[in-house]
Length: 154
Ligand SMILES: CC(C)(COP(=O)(O)OP(=O)(O)OC[C@H]1O[C@@H](n2cnc3c(N)ncnc32)[C@H](O)[C@@H]1OP(=O)(O)O)[C@@H](O)C(=O)NCCC(=O)NCCS
Image (cartoon, rainbow, N blue to C red):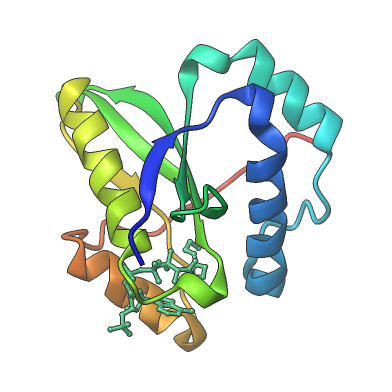
């Protein structure tokens, strides 16, 4: 089924929050240990940083949202400047394996080229249960780039 991919502003944040909630539920213990979303906090942060948060939504021919992706810009010397990070990508189950994820990644690549990013990073869950997700990223051209660590501040 054909989909269109477009930017999603903070005024429609509910669509993204809903899908990320579903993503976290699917990830289960492999999702972030912060657990349930602090929706007012997310909205406040998104509004404050609206120019730095790039959210894309895939819609079916009826305009219904079927996928979501959040991307931010980062910077490092070792990446020779600006690069992108895909923090969340999710396609609703009935629309999977029909190219929606591919179109979202394509939108991220196009956006990154326009902003002169040198690369795009993404983190994938490690267990066998998520082998298909890693296969998806590999098919889209991503290569393994080492473990990720984090330090929680709250
Ligand atoms: C990974 C995901 C974004 C890909 O979107 P998509 O629209 O299914 O992707 P495409 O149609 O372009 O490509 C399909 C490929 O995605 C991969 N994939 C990963 N998880 C999948 C799932 N649960 N169902 C179907 N395909 C999945 C497979 O490699 C699949 O290829 P196949 O059909 O030959 O097996 C989507 O399947 C999804 O939301 N999965 C669950 C959440 C997830 O893994 N998010 C990633 C961040 S942690």
